[in-house]
Image (cartoon, rainbow, N blue to C red; front, side, top):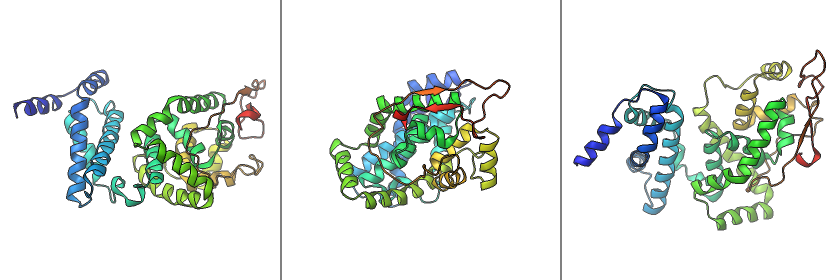
Length: 312
């Protein structure tokens, strides 16, 4: 009991700077994870969702990690703060949402867990966010750059995102999700044997997932009207807006591809085409030099980059 009070006292202390928060989080990680997992267990049991001790223990631990990760992301911007109170507040706010996703029956299958894990990871990882364009639609780096109308610097970031995801991000995400190699292989076989059925189920689930996870989306990233999307691409601004929102909102992604039909030569349509493993083949971007006095003009018919055929 005395040890528990010491831990609670340490967690209840005030941190005054982002650097102090980082140090505290590193030292107190086991206690933070135990607290988040404990809250999750209690929530599942109090709402009558605890049915299988083994399966739900794993689920509680996975969502404990998710909650702590959200805490680490937002905590640095909340200093000075009391980390214990901040974590409790974040957890209470999360579980006060209608229909929390952590126990949704449709997400307990390997496909549901895979899509849930990718989407939740995309909330906090740009590598995972960019990878959604491939895992959900089969689009490679060059296609993503073209669809989003990105400039030179942003295009290079896309290639780096895909590379990091291929090298380590995907494997780490799969381990966090808890999918076994047998389950991954079975998913791939299902997609090969019944592609239409798997893609239809994927489309149904991503609407559920994206609606849920966009609750954590910054308030300044709402859905836009067709006119506003046209303005954003035509006047060539809002790169981060395009990337975040279109990866996490299928409805707007379809709308934008339809809007940019001519620029895309009618060839790139966001049809669901599930890919389980990361894209293996990279590509090279060869950039044109800026025109004299003209600068970059991505949305006006004169591209700022040429994409290698190997990347499309």
